[in-house]
Length: 307
Length: 302
Image (cartoon, rainbow over all chains, first blue to last red; front, side, top):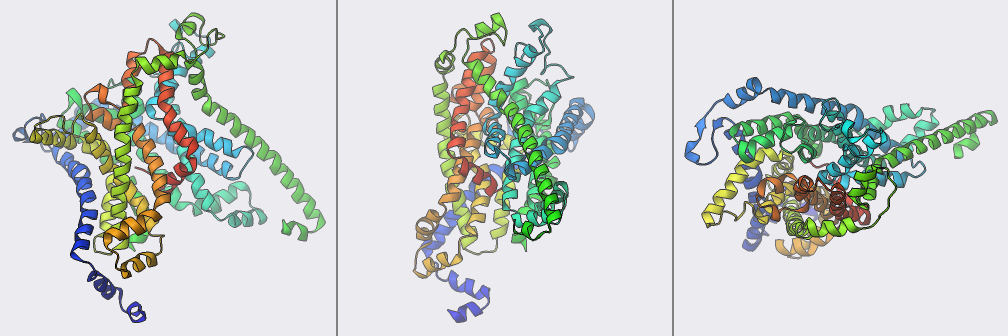
């Protein structure tokens, strides 16, 4: 055995491989083959399929009817579909809100709760509660507060005839939606960050305090840099969730464009009556917008493996 | 604390003052975060409160009218009129096989990738993890066509489309990426020696997996099971696009339609929403440790 360990690992692998019986080889083949087949067939092939289809015209019925369209679907979206730009604007506002307000709030909460302030266990549960609810339930719950005869209008003393239509009025709808979305997002970010903070050596923080660093300095100079992997993941989640928002908007507005947003726009163009290959192009745009966060996430997670 | 003793007296006083100031500050922060937390759960509490009252009372006297009638009548009515038991059964039919299959197939891949070295290990793991992050919309059109085509092939259009198995398969294909990633990072922490001794003892690959590795995977499998149950339970998109028959939809997608149908009796809808939320809330409170563990194990889901 001692000779074995000294030998290069390649040889060792080769030696071990000879151990495999025919049966073992078949077992291994099945172990890896079935999951890979399923995953590739239902995720990767369709993804490539959609990318190819986005360059075609197709009514979606007979394969023979597919005709090459070049970039026509994309041109159509960029130049002849004003709602695309409106949706993009809403998604951008969404992203900015999440990035500058919701995510930092989640991080701040995590930081305070991690210091084990009084009642931190209760707070942690309270903030995380909305995350386990489905967006469908979230939509119904908030509608309760914001309906014409709901809590907020009641609080403002407005009768139903003069009630503010929070979801219908363009002055309010996006902000109301953002508050609802943040209600879930903040708890999620808090929990992720909290787990990261727990892993940080408390001696680091104590040392900083003894050296007379203020809390803000400790956070900025010591904790934040030490949290780099979690920071990346939190940023990736923030971007992806802002780009792909769908469920909640769909629950509130259905497929009508009450608040134009990319997720619903894609949905309207790929499913049901309005389906066309323009929908495929929309899906590809959605994918391309999230490719940078996807890659940085993978880089973060596979840093060691690639080495 | 030992450092405080070493300090000269004057400095010690100053430090005490500082600690006192910090204490006051902490209390203020705690109160502030506490008020914020109450505001956080208020929407849920308010919905719960409303679900215990008849809608007619609110119509007559407004939202702040004192309750004359309180009870679970909305709940019993919601269960029968909204056919909630059917939707719950649909959810169970989809969620249970999905979670089981995802974890089983995911652990197979993770096992081979971490315990047997061959060239494509990292590439395979990357394939699964990246696949998990693709937007579902990017995948939908071809999957839909594939399901219909396979349906025509076997002579039953509802073979996969508008069928629970169709939804189960796409969930498994997607979520497997996450399960594989999480399980493989966990398996890397299990000492290689355990596997080596199994192999030296002449255990077949089959025995090695089922008898040696699988029992060791219990903690991450429990966490993943809790987490995936919540995700699949809360899924909205796939059940919406792959089901055309409403009576086959799971509870979460069904709520969307129920909302339109019961808009005239909103308190009934509140009761329905509360019932729909109950399973995830129970899972969260009973298995919070696993839930949080699962979420932070892989740190994210795309």
